[in-house]
Image 1 (cartoon, rainbow, N blue to C red):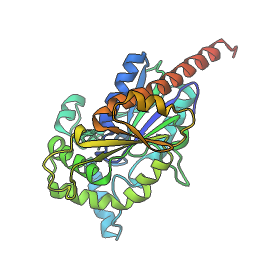
Image 2: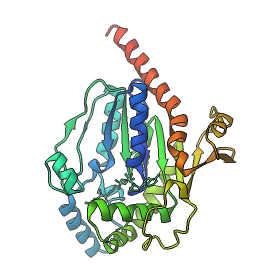
Image 3: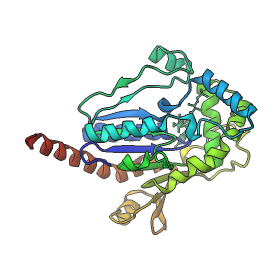
Length: 299
Ligand SMILES: Nc1ncnc2c1ncn2[C@@H]1O[C@H](COP(=O)(O)OP(=O)(O)OP(=O)(O)O)[C@@H](O)[C@H]1O
Ligand SMILES: O=C(CO)[C@H](O)[C@H](O)COP(=O)(O)O
């Protein structure tokens, strides 16, 4: 955690909607005049696509059927923790991109399945924004979670998460339904042991729940729309959250527990703005004040 150089971490499984949620954050950053630098979790995969395939084959042959991109060992989480620590201390750090598709390849000048070179983040930022699979991970050897000042979980109920993943991976990444189904199955062990535990460490979880039948996600023809879903928003620490303000501002919302509200799917953006803007403003202002004070203090 760092007052001077705060970190916001948005964590979710593949297809959960973390990239989509990033847009909501970008709007708040723009409106509030907050300069953010970003890290994509996929940048910290340990292997490029070909090496991952080879490692997977090696492990499968050795009898390990649980290895996947969700696994701790498939990612450089010590490096991610080190980048979080360095940013918290100095406001600087390095990152890169994992290129998934032909579109991204054109943008980054690197073929799909490869990484760009490591690059220093732009100097002078107010905060670091992470979006990916492991932003609240804590094991015996690595603690990414401890370095993040605001942790957000993006967790649709699982059938919806799969539908979102299947549609995105088919449309944007060119995979077949069968290949995606196999990946979902292979990742299940780490989904349970690595992904889920993070959502008890997050400060706020946004859980999209469809109100249409998603019983067989593998044949769903489209992703349930905003109007066909509600979002459960759960606060780890409800102290200081003005629930009556939120429920009066967000039409159709209600409290389902002492720490949770439910909003219509179409109000997710508004809910995120109302909830997150004051938190982001506070982090950025505290950081600016602390950096100013540090500049005034003689070395
Ligand atoms: N609130 C939402 N309403 C409707 N569709 C959504 C919503 N959130 C995400 N989706 C859809 O789900 C798919 C996956 O979303 P997104 O790319 O944001 O996932 P992700 O968590 O960033 O995945 P990855 O980490 O694998 O890149 C996209 O097709 C997106 O349009
Ligand atoms: O989104 C993902 C994880 O968050 C991808 O599954 C992962 O980055 C691997 O990508 P690919 O299978 O296309 O090489």
